[in-house]
Length: 122
Image 1 (cartoon, rainbow, N blue to C red):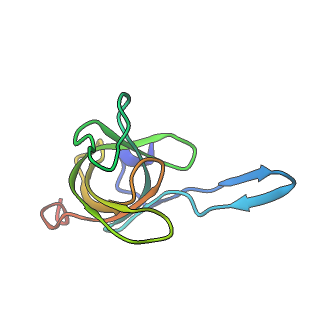
Image 2 (cartoon, one colour; image 1 turned 90 degrees about the vertical axis):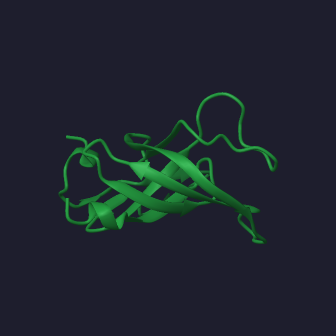
């Protein structure tokens, strides 16, 4: 069963890759309580640039690329950092209707967030 369809806690496992003789393990995606950790995937077509970011059509997945939900970009802003120069605010909606306000650095990057307050009692 897709973890996005249930309110049960979900913590992804087996997030290990082997590259050039080295092994790397990540924590993967998680949905627990009022928190979510997932990965952002931009819509197909023109990729985000410094000047343009697609607002609609984003997909949010686990480490293995399994879809957890859909979303939109609600804001972007520039920042100085070693990992990127743009931050995104997303609204992520799971199939069961739960909505999360997330932040991340865009395509292929991790996005973390909290359940919207109006969803907390649902």
